[in-house]
Amino acid sequence: MAMLEEARKLPMRVTSTYSVAGRCASTGALGAVVTSSSPSVGARCAQIKAGVGVVLTQNVTDPRLADIGLCALELGFDAPGAVRAMRAVSVSHEYRQLAAVDASGRSSVYTGDNALGVHAEFRADNVASIGNLLSNPEIPEAMGRHFGERSDLPLAERLLSSIELGFRMGGELDQERSIALIVYTDTPFPYVDLRVDYSDDPLGDLKRLWEVYGPQAENYKTRALAPELAPPYGVKGEE
Image 1: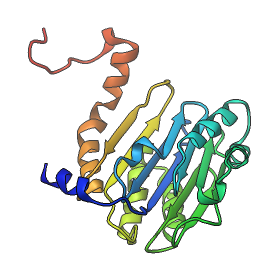
Image 2: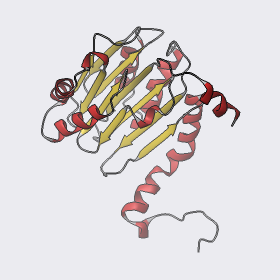
Image 3: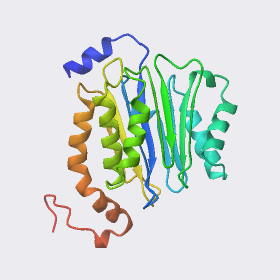
Image 4: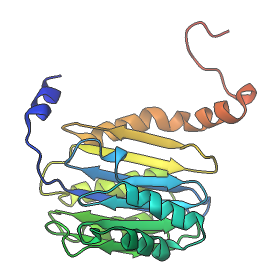
């Protein structure tokens, strides 16, 4: 509670963000991980639709652009086309930083001329990474390449490992406060949707959440699709 009281006293300020959007080429799963010095970054900066794509919008964020990007992907645009669509409808696109990965693994990134501080971007097959107000301009490329190299890991763990590298390289100029990890597989609801909205150690908190949730993720999916096949719930009163 004390930390929340301190947070309420803080003035509004410019905040920094870096993120990775990725696709598993083996399973078609789509995911994103994003961290920021602002609170509740997971509520604003990443949107995903199973079988469609991932869209990131950050740096003076306008969450409406992610809706436009996903709509464009659903209409058959590829990732570069979706990013062009987001730019076309935004009268302030020069303030935005955008990325998209589509269901075929094509990717696209865009950073406007008014992006804040040290900013950078990277794209390759199945991955896009962007960042602003960075302590190190090499972070997005390093995260993106790391993602590509760790195809041995499940998608959620690849994303976690990639953002952890960003932290180790210095991350943002300001302290990261929030983080989110989102993965969609073959259902319209998320397979993973874990968020730390305000913390002194958002990455550590997210990793601990994943340690608890990760082993249960498949069970939650089964309970939604075929509850009669689900394992025991492990709760009091279950018979």
